[in-house]
Image 1 (cartoon, rainbow, N blue to C red):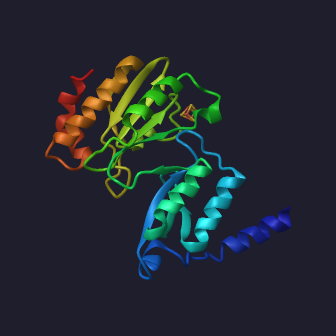
Image 2: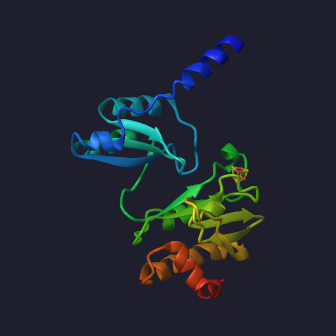
Image 3: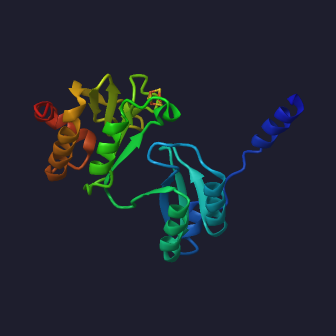
Amino acid sequence: MKQYMKQNFDNAMKLPMPGKTFAKLGAKGDYVALQVRPGLINKHVTSEQLITLANLEKEGSVKYSAGHSFIVTIQQNSMEEAIEMLTQVGLYVVPPTPCATLKCCDFCDGDVLDALPLARQLLLQIEQMPMKQRIRIGFNACTLACYNAVQDDLGLVFHNGKVDVYGGAIPMGRRARSGQLLMKNVPEQQILNIIQQLLTLYNTSPVEKFATFIKREKATIQLLQ
Ligand code: SF4
């Protein structure tokens, strides 16, 4: 094993760079990038899903992203066929249009399910809701918050039938920062309504940047509770 670990590290240290980036493919034709996930909650991939991704990679490229997704780059004219293939093996395609999208934790691989009814309700009502910009809503099913909900545009952290709501994170760049706590111990029955109102407020606001919107409208948002 030691020998293989050494060989493995040596191979990695060759630092291979990708040959089929979005930019390189785009220089050759009309390509689009799809954000693809094993599921809305599940993070494991099956052999059938991997085979489908491998087949798509032959004509385009597949990489994984910091946002818990595969980025599948394919030719524009084969997008419909690719989505059909992905759908057949249960891979979820995040719409490429501006919308709200939930980034759920994996519920400890399905062992911690108290928050599942709320997550299902939010997914049904909010996932893919048209927005003026893509809004990432982190949903973590316990206070360990190991999927970093507080780093998303909105972060929902579930505990004992209640939810803490964070907002306004700047997830990258030199000014990166976590979201601020907007509401604490919100009963789960109220969350859907509050998030819908908050997203509608943002959609009708003249402010584009979500973190700025949260900063400016914090007092109004807190009245939603
Ligand atoms: S946030 Fe909590 S419930 Fe979700 S995967 Fe992490 S530890 Fe498990």
